[in-house]
Amino acid sequence: MVVLLLLMSIISFIIIQLPPGDYLSAYIAQLRMSGQELNEAQIASLIKQYGLDLPVYQQYFKWMWNILHGDFGRSFQWNRPVSDLLGERLPLTMAISLFSFALTYLIAIPIGIYSATHQYSLFDYFFTVLGFIGLAIPNFLFAMILVYLFYRFFNISPLGLFSPAFVDAPWSWAKFIDMINHMWVPIIAIGTAGTAGIIRTMRGCLLDELNKPYVITARAKGLPERELFFKYPVRLAVNPIISTIGWILPGIFSGETITAITLMLPTVGPLLHEALMTQDMYLAGSIVLILSFLTVLGTFVSDILLALVDPRIRYT
Image (cartoon, rainbow, N blue to C red; front, side, top):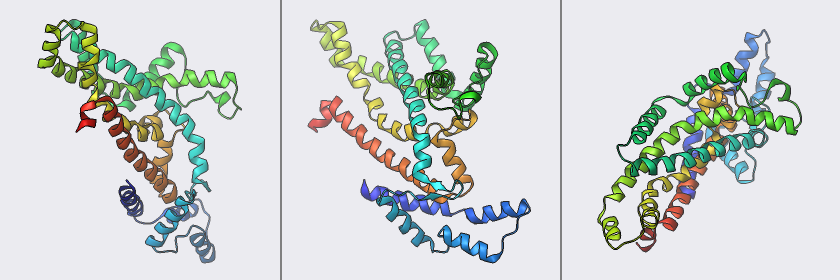
């Protein structure tokens, strides 16, 4: 994991450096377009201030050295520490993501089980069609539809996480209720595609397990249907879902970027997008590195959970 993260950090830093120019070049161009002129001494001072006078490899080692000491660097665009920017957006990002993923799994797994045990029934066809629709519609498009419906029928504008009156207000019970009212649209929009995919996975895996000889043998020996069903087929059918459950860690950190931009959510995803567009390398590099770390960590967590759930993996 350490070697993999080291390679990811190098690749991330190189990719961020690939576009021509840098943040300072874009910043100077913006100032000149607005009618402000900078002399050579001011430009040289800014280059030294941002450390852009160093070779790329020295910038990388300086960045990594600071990260190992808990300093993610300073955002060029915001002129603030990266850790402060992430700290402001992370709680709301995690709240939206955790609610979305909880809704996804609580709905998808029972529906998948029902569809498998009532194969080719009316409800099975209904959930199958619903699942394909959920997979086919992009999340950001579904979010736009929900925005219209909530505004049209409930007179609620779900853009952002707060009404204009509560954006800069201190936390209170009224602000919390206002945030809850605005969270339904992003939770539903983000959770739809994941729900549809898990329904299909759970249904297919459970159908495979129900047709295996050990289920027929257990029934022949008189094992109660409920005990047989949940102790063996369901427990094994959920393995593919558990094997990828750790991948939600980077999703929890970043949120759905395009959906968040569409809904104007103050989460980490839009912050990463903006950092990449402006070549704010320390902010973008830090977020990409954290996402890489969470992906590797999530895979490790999935392996452990899979071994805990399935004894066959432990024995081999």
